[in-house]
Length: 621
Ligand code: 5AD
Ligand code: SF4
Image (cartoon, rainbow, N blue to C red; front, side, top):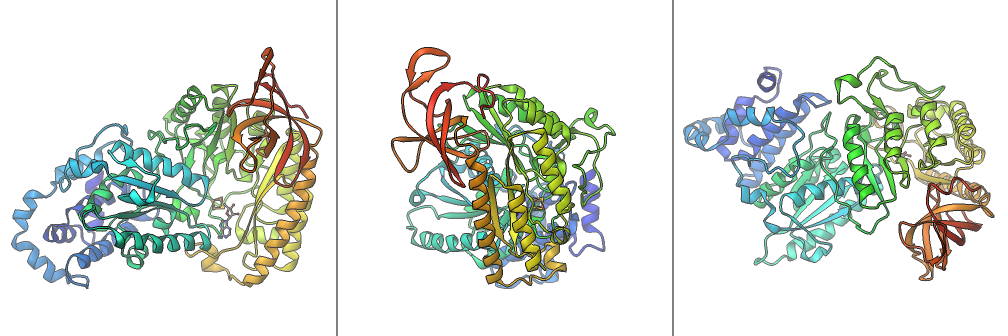
């Protein structure tokens, strides 16, 4: 029923493309994959944020491109095309997908068990969908969300019969999981594509052709521009389209380019268990929500990753339990705005309780209500395994109600570490960024957090040289760095991104050299202050989760303290507090007590005292 409504909407006179014409034209070209794309468009209308028009025009554009790659160089005249189409339309229609196929697919539940093998779309055989043991090489760029997305994409492909390789030379399929947050991140991908082009052209005729795919934010942001600019890109999949990868790759096998960049309102990959890439790892990331509704004026994320949506609590807990059974000792709850978490998946979660924002903070969107909130999730996750450390990233400062702070304070296994992205120390710039708080409100929150959680470790993100930033604004940021004295920091020069509000309404008027000079100054001040902050740990005994050998020295081990700072210490024999008299050496995944002897802006050094458990070692300093 819904599908038909959408079909009517797509066929409406206001619409630039008529669904009937699309059907004729696709049947005529034998482009039955396009029919599936149409079906995808129809399916996703429900969940599209920016309305159906964008996706339909994207689809029509792609069809022109697919056509030109098949025959002539220009987009076909629709009238001539339709006349030709009618001639043998009936016979071709008989072999194409039926309306029943659309209806069946459109009404199928969105979240299927990933182990289920679906019926193939009528234009693809099961064999084509099942990977044919092709070897996939995955390369990840950007943030931790992309690392997690890589694991999700791989989980989906593995279930479809693909093999994974870590050797680029033997790959049949190369997939780049990309980042768009700054210009430089994209430039790195373009450069990489040029290198891969050589690999593709060098491929022997006796081998299957090499297929190259762009996944994630860059696919979403640039869409057809990538296919136009780099003809050797075969597959584009946006962050919400990874389930479609087996089909996209199967289409690419036939020599066509294939793309799905549709954003969803509800895709969280809740049922896709990511494949942990490093089996010896002591910690894992667990995705709890995707997307962002904040619309900070500089940021491309809401456009590339779509609307904010949360994964159901039950499925998060299931994944955390599994990780605990596998012996992992740390999980980091992951999302663009983790603490804005809101599980609305069950009707009974939807009450009228409104959201408590941090004092002095506002949102750019209408206040949301109901759902299971972050405090509930954190509480539940921290109860799974008292020996498992819990962290979360990246939060937004607006969503730190006292319930969350109280939990962090009282639970031994929730790390006393909070990322509190400030972006700027100037209220004027913060307003231009539409961050929803002033410098004063931010500083008040910092004090409030420190009162609640003494010894909490704080980190932040800052942008140097945002539109209109004056020298006075910059000095305000320097002074915020001095005032808060963060333990960790991530500092960036502003990079204008198309589509953002800043791109449309503000002027990127700080010269590049000034941005870089200010960035350098911020880095210097951050380091000075972080060194001072970290030096307060010298002489203290801290609980460290051992990760393995130090990269710099084979005789040293490396781990992380509660604040997520790296701690280096000599690999020495020590006592095990639970087995008095037993002498042991630390292994990855062990908790050890380390006496801190020196500190820099990024690392602590010390010597190991004993092996212990998280429960037995409440805060030592
Ligand atoms: N330019 C520079 N830095 C940016 N960030 C986000 N968008 C931009 C941009 N256009 C930074 C913010 C954010 C972090 C993930 O990246 O500081 O918190
Ligand atoms: Fe980007 Fe702001 Fe959303 Fe963070 S909160 S992802 S900076 S829009």
